[in-house]
Length: 214
Image (cartoon, rainbow, N blue to C red; front, side):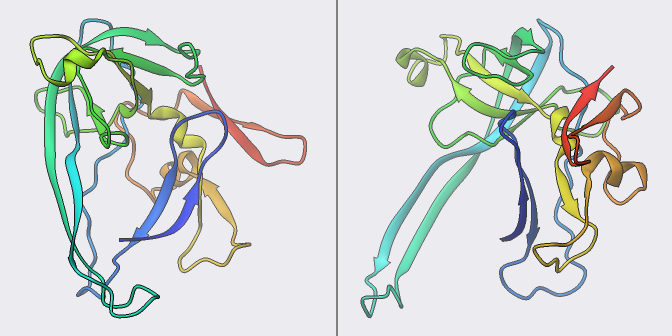
């Protein structure tokens, strides 16, 4: 995939990227959609974590010139799905992690950051209430699955304040809307859990800086 746009701020550990296929694909291009879940899981609630694990790159062909042309790589990865419970919820941040987040018993390893967490609910579509952002586990959790981990999961609802262009391909100065506004006008999938409880907070110059939750 090619990331054609990225939006982030300095108060959360979440970014929003617009992606397009790296190679030309037959129309329509329809990647799988995992909606945002604006609800925050409760302490003791069961959650599932889905992420990439065991990623590695092996050179299978040396480059044919000093610019790297002809370099051949074999990329390996696997999808890891883990289950655990929520151990704490921190709407105002947790220690060094200054954004709304929660912790779980699920152990994570290097490379799993950016995976999503969801609450399994009968009859509901899978939707991401959190994104993996930090690992506080003792080393033993990496090798002994009988020992609980301590993973920090950033809540996804603050991403509603991030912005995307109104159209693609977009020049650098293209008009942008927040994910909240795009959901309100039906341009992106409506978040599970609703959006009526959110409002955008503004700078004096009118730029959106964050999103508030009532």
